[in-house]
Image (cartoon, rainbow, N blue to C red; front, side):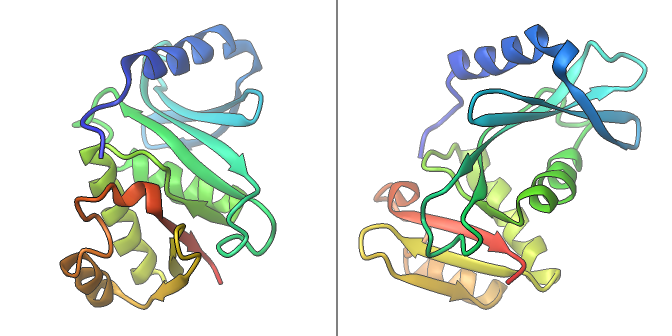
Length: 184
């Protein structure tokens, strides 16, 4: 697990947003925030700005469309959230959940975890998995070494997998384990 986001990647994402504001499309509103999407080559960035101060980005999420891991992606592609940055955590606590479910999940139908995680990324996925179970969605775990797929049937099973070090162990779980959330 990495300890923090690479500042160069975050700066690159923010620079891309700034340089491509004219190509951004407003896709929805969430409370006092407007949510936009801007597309790049092989990725999209979903970001939220204050409606009253649109120059201030408070949250950004970079998503790559992937066409691998067919064990997890029966329709042929999924969204992989590869970079998230909250710029004002207290004011936008629920924006990460909103963008994950109402924007990215609705668009892609399957969202899979990234190969790199910060400590916050682990917490982010725990919240999303808990929400997925509560909404009757399917959570899968793919071991990239054995190519075995396991359906996780609820929060209790998830906790057992964690206690048995099958998820989030000390051996860089995120490079061998991919989590996915889907409707079926």
